[in-house]
Structure formats: C-alpha cells, structure tokens
Length: 248
Ligand code: NAP
Image (tube, rainbow, N blue to C red; front, side, top):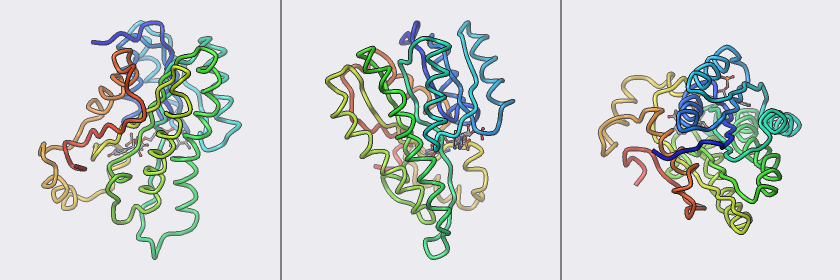
C-alpha cells in the first residue's frame, strides 16, 4: 500500500458517504486530514476520532464550499493547524433532481454553486500553498452522470461535466509546477445521496452494470488514494471511472 506519511489532506464533505471513506483511507495510509462538513458536526467529529485512532492528526472544519470566503477560511485553518496542504479532494456535492420542465431556477443555481463553484473556490484557495510547495494533488469527484447524462439530473450532470473541463484546464495550467489534477467519476454508490432512489429503479440500473453490483464508498476511496500517491505522479488531467463499467 502506498504511504502518505507526512502529507496533509483536505477532504470537502468529509463527514459522510464517499468523503468520509476518502478521509479515513487517506488517514490509514498516513496523511493528516482536515474533514470539512456543512451541517453534520457530530459525524465530522466521529471521522476525526477515527483518523486519530489511526495515529493521525485530524481536524473538523465547518464551511460552505460554495462561498469563497468560507473556502479561504477552510484552507487557512488547514495551513495554520498543519503548516502545509498536499492533497485537496473536492468531494462535497448535492443533488436537486427534477425534469427540466419542472426544474426551479434555484435547483439549478444551488447544484452548480456547491458542486462546481465549490471546487473553483476551494482549488483557488488551496493552489497558492501548493504552488509554494511546488507539489500537490487535486482530485475532483465528478460522476458517471457527468459523462453519460441522466434523466432528471440536467443540473447535476452539467455541474459534474463542468468539473471535468475545469480539471483538464488546471492540469495544463499547473503541470509545470508539480501539481496534478484528476477526476474520479463514481457510478452508483449507496450513500445518503442515493437513499431516495426506489428499489425498482435500482434493480433496473444494476442490470446495466457489467460488474453486476453497486460500488462501495471504499471502492471510490481506493481510487482517490491512488491518485493522491507518489505512484500516480505521471497522471494528470485523467478521468478515472469507478463505476463497475456502467459508463463505458
Ligand atoms: P452525501 O452522502 O450526501 O454526503 C455529502 C457530503 O457533502 C456531506 O459530507 C455534506 O456535509 C457535504 N456538503 C454538502 N453541501 C456542502 C457544502 N455546501 N459545503 C461543504 N460540504 C457540503 O454524498 P455522497 O454520495 O457521499 O457524494 C459525495 C460526492 O460524490 C458528491 O460530489 C457526489 O456528487 C459524488 N457522487 C456520488 C455518487 C453516489 O452514487 N453516491 C455517484 C457519483 C458521484 P454534511 O454532512 O455536513 O451535510
């Protein structure tokens, strides 16, 4: 297993679901972690306790990534506590699903604000420290919906496809400075986000997955940990699907 000892990671939306698994996997591999959350302080503190139980330093920080001043404050809290920032995982995300004809303007705005502008805010705040260090790993969590589209998810799919263009542009901007920027695109992963989907729909979806199962949060966390590692030093601008083959 690759070692992340001595690295500092910041995971947005690290209190639950995929972000929680990512924060804990990075901690297990040696990184100190900042666990960002929006509302669920108790869940974030539980992740901090588990990371500390792995022998790591960890910090929970409340912040709305869609607000630039809060993103800046989150990065400042990371730097003032741990002195550096090596790995940024832009994982915080939301859905507000509706068919286009019924979609409210605020459903569009809120999804784009959190999923896409949040990644912009966080990356802009974090990249200065990485430029000073002349090294860094930025991993953006997109989705199979951003690659294939999905009925009822025009806002979400647009935000997730936008993350891919954002990633590739930054990979070009930052490649000469020792910073890699990549995307992980999960398929269907049971978490709070996907709880609302009914059983009939789940079964239909499962039939399209070549590996014949839904993914786990750990499946995604392992891919993120790889991209965060030294072994992935020559990978940038890549989109790594973790979807059991659903999106191919
Ligand atoms: P989740 O279980 O709903 O967790 C969402 C996380 O994001 C929580 O930690 C939440 O914090 C945080 N969050 C929400 N809005 C935020 C904001 N404005 N600022 C900071 N944090 C915020 O979601 P998930 O399923 O783990 O999804 C994680 C990421 O993977 C998302 O980007 C999602 O789009 C992507 N993804 C998920 C799937 C899937 O099938 N689950 C598939 C493809 C991609 P609180 O706990 O404080 O509310």
